[in-house]
Length: 84
Image 1 (tube, rainbow, N blue to C red):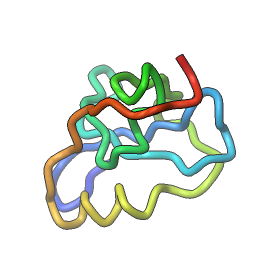
Image 2 (cartoon, rainbow, N blue to C red; image 1 turned 90 degrees about the vertical axis):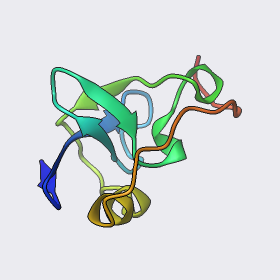
Image 3 (cartoon, rainbow, N blue to C red; image 1 turned 30 degrees about the vertical axis):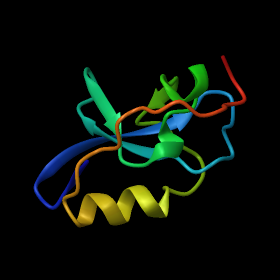
């Protein structure tokens, strides 16, 4: 998916399929960092596990807004997450 001339892959959380899907800068083969902190959904905010280009719910509004503004992705940071 392209937004404002940059390439993103949509990622649906593997454990929370009804949650909003997030945007990750990069391609299907190499998804990069997410566009919002909630995209880091595992390992206490330092990892993620996603279904690439497969989502059933809405897209994260924060991710979409940041992509449209051509902002940089959000680096990982330690925070409590539900999943390992």
